[in-house]
Length: 181
Image (cartoon, helix red, strand yellow):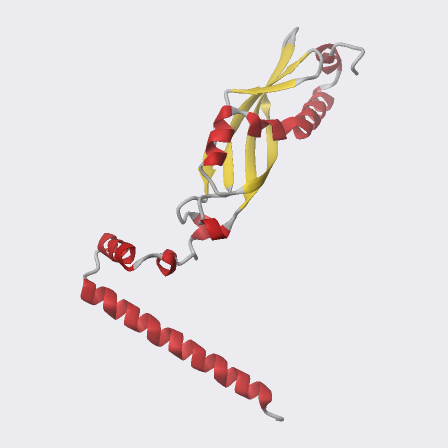
């Protein structure tokens, strides 16, 4: 394909084949979205590393003219969360406009990037943020929840009782495993 004009080749294909070719081209190059200023900026706000991208072409938004092919791409980028550094998000989603030139080169522009799963959203709802807080920070959380110090102490006490009961139940379970019956 490098000998011929890539746009001419796209125009010669059936609609189905054109969509397949464009999807393949985007799949091969979508990692380049991470090199844009918008995606890079969002990535630096997280503690995640080793990012990879999954992209999907909006089939109804493909424009092929004489010199280039422009398509809208929805993407999600995923990184590996470094939990010891705190949870600051490990997923970015957005859109990008992919412009494919006559040589088959892809440039991503008009990129949007939004951090997903940040500050306890969705995936991190089960994380007990108060476990890692100082006493002063914990008091601030209690204030935001509308708890008085006495109510907060009651919650902490009940939590302690639940933890003790859980420990006892685990010990009883261990004792049952020692039984020959």
